[in-house]
Length: 259
Image (tube, rainbow, N blue to C red; front, side, top):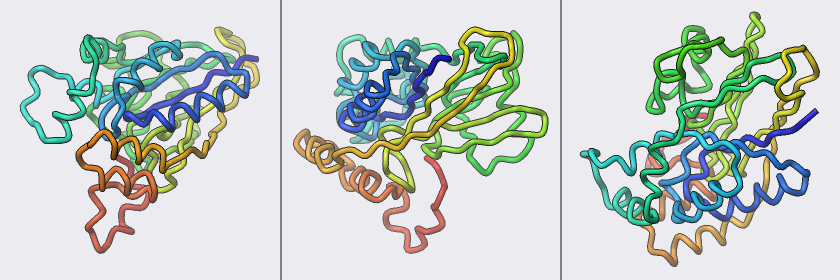
């Protein structure tokens, strides 16, 4: 049996990433796969990329990683310009060149990991999807490439962890977010355990882990660096309230609406 830590959606939150990595290390796990969105929303995308390039065996493309450094991007804002300026030399190119997905075998199951959906990093599949959306996550597409279809799919993007199994023995799970977790703002990641590379059925498990961290230290870092959209970031880190809902008097409607 071997364990792999699956992390996603760090979003420039170096403090949370360091806490999660410390927990992974304390458990003796050496393999880490990252499902994307290293940058944006938080203040230290450059540092997060450096750490993930060093620590993660697999790094996958996220929607922010594709969108933020896109030289043809037409939409801009103070926040986007600031987060882009934080990147180091060559980091934008590294982000956009990341693979779309990663497939592997474990305990007789074919696992596929990607950031958001089987078609594009810019299509969001929420926890309250319908059956067609569920089955679409297991399809082979031009983005995933041809090959055997997976029986287990893991993704990030929505910042909303869940685990779902169909009657056809298809397993879909979301890792949640390390750096920008909604509803419960405590960072979360997944430990996948099984016999790696095996085509034979064997024990298999997925475990969700919440890791508390120093939220105020991260807020202080963002404040010191003069990051735009600070109020929204504070709302998300302290309360798990999506910044788009901050001024909505009916903000309870955003419960479990991932971003």
